[in-house]
Image (cartoon, helix red, strand yellow):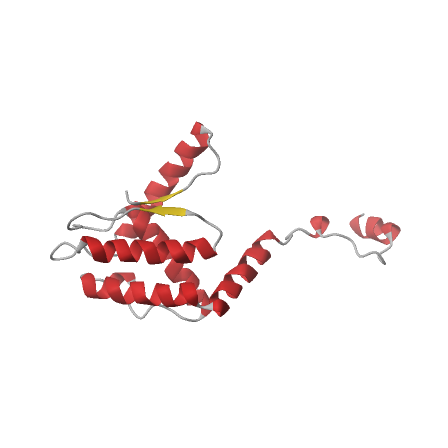
Amino acid sequence: MPLKEKMKDNRADVVIVAEQADDLLGDTLSDLIPTPEKPYKGQVVTQLAEAIRKVVALMDRELDARPYKGPVPELDPDLVRYLAATLEAAADFGKPSPVSPEQVRGDNELIVITEHLLRLAADRDFREFLDEELDEEVAFDDEDMVPMDEEEDIDAMLMRRL
């Protein structure tokens, strides 16, 4: 599998469960992309993996992308999983891919997606959009966890909770 996330948590049980969930998700998403009539060129899939790696790096995730050697009969589940995540981020940003995964029939469609992802990886507005998304995820959802304003009275807060 040429595209693999670098794991920061080395606990074997956590890694095994995470990899099983990733495999299940990847297998499910792989069904979205039809098997090509002839294998993809290794260089085309390598370039796609590198474009995905660049976009995922903007999401504060680090991937290892190793080259594909020789023809690729179908895209591996990890590649498809990260491709789906990057295309979803692009669509959320307002710049969906000109080719959806369901439309991929061969190298040409992968090249179009690769070019799209490379443009996004270099787009400063996209980078800022992803930073905003990450900040929102870190923000507190629960009212109890929101830091109090200095002006808010502790007694009023306690009364409201009763």
